Figure 1: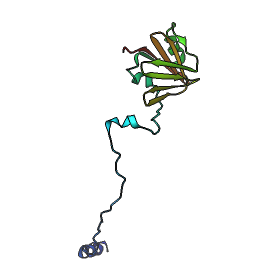
Figure 2 (figure 1 turned 30 degrees about the vertical axis):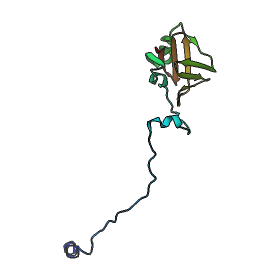
Figure 3 (figure 1 turned 45 degrees about the vertical axis):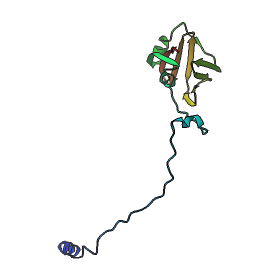
Figure 4 (figure 1 turned 60 degrees about the vertical axis):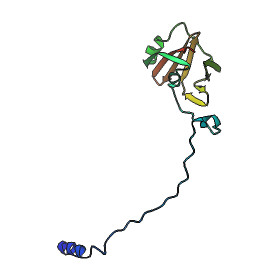
Length: 149
């Protein structure tokens, strides 16, 4: 029976041909890219969750150290000379602005905005800044110095 099916298929192969037609799908044209298009940007800015935001802006701050571990271990590495920054506060380093809120912060530079998610605490003195982030029983401490102009 299977042999008969194979022979019948081979004999009628021209009738069983599968034909695939091309399909045209209309798509809108791509946006015109111009290097200076950011200057005319009028929509919402990209606002990512960025606990590392200050480390990504070397024009404003230079990261000098990072310590990760349980909260007690990390707090022991917090420089004793730094004072806690009480929220709400606004810190400025070069053309970066850090808006310190109760549990988080927003970093702004030009049209870019980054959100440092909760449990973020800042400590500062002239010439030094520290960001302590806690998440559950873990913590991360990053220290920074202002970049030279």
